[in-house]
Image (cartoon, rainbow, N blue to C red; front, side):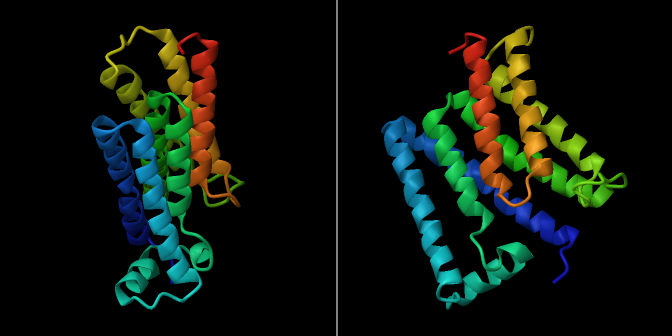
Length: 213
């Protein structure tokens, strides 16, 4: 099946489940504590792994799941773990290890930055890189600006920090640039794992070097 813009749109819509992951985490962290919230996310991960076991090892005997997977899997994912597994692993790692603001920004950049790159690049892309060949500059720039916007929302608007704070602008630029570069050049390793981990790690290092931890 040829991969179309509609397929990409449907696939990225599923990526909005990241908002559900964050809601579950903060809701459970508020009721119980962050450790319990992480355990619940691990339970969600295990559930998805069991579904992948049905698909990959048993050939998916559940019709509704077969239809779901058929329309939302890329060719390379037909016989490999789906991107949602890598996304969940990345989200759990950053929430467990990094500053909460960094973790949230990294997760949202993974979702919305990647979404902007794919949808804008495929719909409006005219100027392509020589490598990777199917990557358009329009998509790269769209992702970068969306990542910057996410950083502004998380570090300034949500956190109530002054826009004049240069340190947080540096952190935003570090994370947005990292996320964009990783999404652009990641090929063999799923970017849904690499983006949150790499951008979160660099953001955390920036927080430490700027004395904000």
